Image 1 (cartoon, helix red, strand yellow):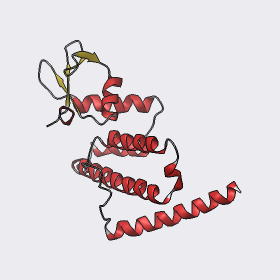
Image 2 (cartoon, one colour):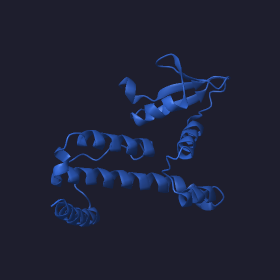
Image 3 (cartoon, helix red, strand yellow):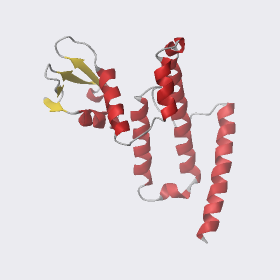
Image 4 (cartoon, rainbow, N blue to C red):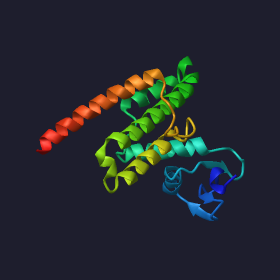
Amino acid sequence: MAETDKPLLIKRYASRRLYNTETSDYVTLEDISGFIRDGREVQIVDLKSGDDLTRQYLLQIVAENESKGQSVLPINVLTDLVRSYTTQAGTMVPQFLAASFEAFQNSQSKWVENINQINPMAKMPGFEAMQAQQEAFLKAMTGGIGGKWPAPGDEPAPKEEEDLDAIKKQLGELQEKLSKMGK
């Protein structure tokens, strides 16, 4: 197993400082956020008790990003999440969110793949960097839920094909409008 396949172990000391065990230095929440954006899994444990604090710190990173105006979660979603803690539906919410993010990842990667095939913009300088940034964002947002991205040769299910055809049609119409506007 490669070193980057293992979660990066971060130890929290009694002083609440976070220590990267791979590089033997202290890190901040921003550093941890960067590791995750780069596709790295992290595990944060309390040095004294051995308790896993990963969830607590990931939620703190999300809260800090939301408070800085980098809002990803709409108010109604946050409200529904709070409600799910007080209802019996709370036991189903994690599975629902995991399945939703997996479906989102699948459709997003198919969309990107199709754009590359039919969109001349895919040949523009910087497009690949933008695409890589988008994939990193999705991976960071989903925390790797749902496993790997589908391979380029994966065949969509019949319903996905219909959705894909509709998206292609809409994209074609938009490209037509853009080309008319450019003339």
